Image 1 (spheres, helix red, strand yellow):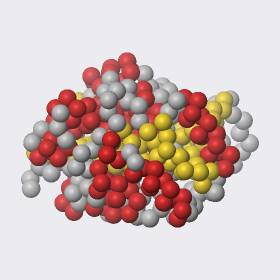
Image 2 (image 1 turned 60 degrees about the horizontal axis):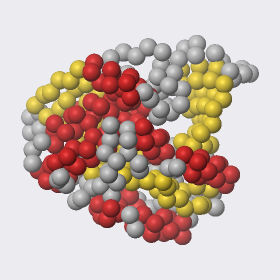
Image 3 (image 1 turned 180 degrees about the vertical axis):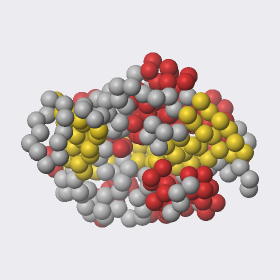
Image 4 (image 1 turned 135 degrees about the horizontal axis):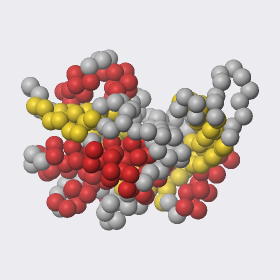
Length: 332
């Protein structure tokens, strides 16, 4: 599914120890007894890594970890054999709790405050990442940024790699300086795009990003609703097949981000060309469309399992074959 030679760096600075509690029925304000409980390393960056491994790519994640929760995360990554650049912080890593209610198929997410990272810890991780950058062909920047991380941290990374490495950004908090550095593709959901651009119309919001920042494309998801990919002069509209037996939508967006990175990097590897040449060469729209369609299928397949960012490749392929795509030209 992926190319084992792809060197992928996931910048996921704000991991979490994830607990998932499942209830037959969850009643707010009442005593609720779970029928199952799972705990695992998570956060958007780690979820991207989990999905990438299932797609045949062996990534490296750069992150901070602290306290007993941070140690549990690192121990799990080591047990799984996942590569990581971890700087241990004096601030404990947060715990996030997902509440699933079978009776109404609802999900409630409880997120603890993010840790505060010190200047020396930031400097240490920056130095660790710098040793890898010349070997990176794909970079994914995913999730929120803990307190103490300067706005320039991820922006500087993008500027150092964007000429030879695809950069996929999946974040909406304090991202304007990051967008100015020129990620090739921004993935957000519809609500995040509205907040980011102060525009309710999805096409208008995506075009605003493209008009003001050196971004190649904007992919917009909306849960089970239609999705959208916008480039400078055209847009792709995706009708996603309705799912039954949804178990847990957590991690679906992260799975989509992973598939986007794989799709872009695989196309570049096959063409033996860098992102700048592929974008200027005129076939970027076809590459991005193919990658985004696969990403939506992966996201849907992830919703059908209880663990975040875990999916069946067969289910993914079946869903992908049913996604309908409409291409429209946009006036400049």
